[in-house]
Image (cartoon, rainbow, N blue to C red; front, side, top):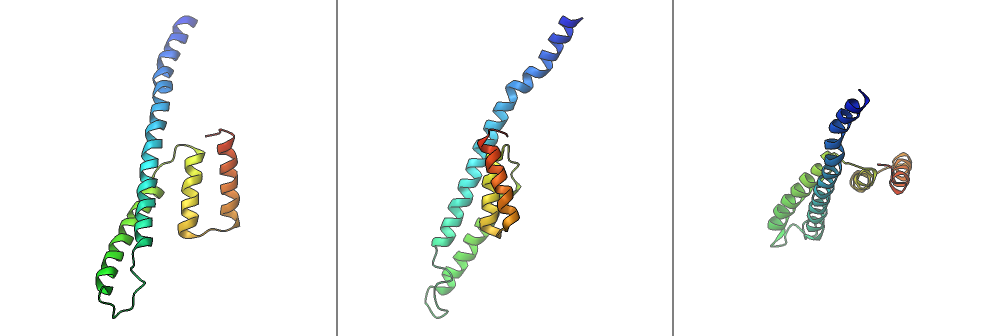
Length: 125
């Protein structure tokens, strides 16, 4: 009876034990790609001359339209970052850092980020 129970338990747990690291690895690479896309879109918007010219500048309308498009792309990339289900505390900390950069934060958010960083360093996912 014990041998059968041990076998069945192992048979049920083994696929989870094998799949869990693969799922986490997939989430990690997906997360890295989404964060990279967000950072690239934010840099493109910040480097663009929109908002820096006077209304009578010959390129003003064109640059403003391009700036609006870049800002919309950056906002969509930020939405993907915020909606991504993180797999561990390191990813959560990075998401929180991005949120504070974009939306601002207060002492309570900084305390929570410090806790998250501490847990991530301790290897607690």
